[in-house]
Image 1 (cartoon, helix red, strand yellow):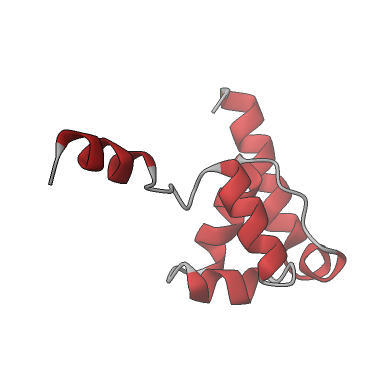
Image 2 (spheres, one colour):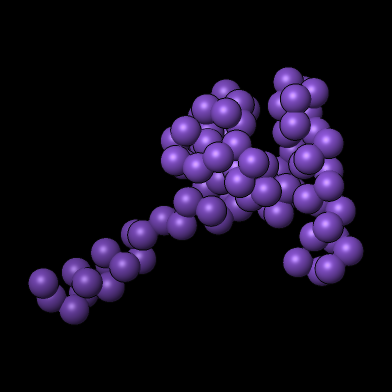
Length: 82
């Protein structure tokens, strides 16, 4: 593999926890935390933490189901500047 090909491959690597990617994937999952957590192969709780850390707004249904935990993660992050 040439140096140019190696650099291009490295640039094309996408971080699935990057805000824009996470937000787009949440949209693709029809704004469903449980479905998104299956795609990411993690627990819904961890998915909520990622969404809260990036300040990605939950759908109405996810707010009803997970809003309390989501807000507590956001408050914790804001309090400690994370």
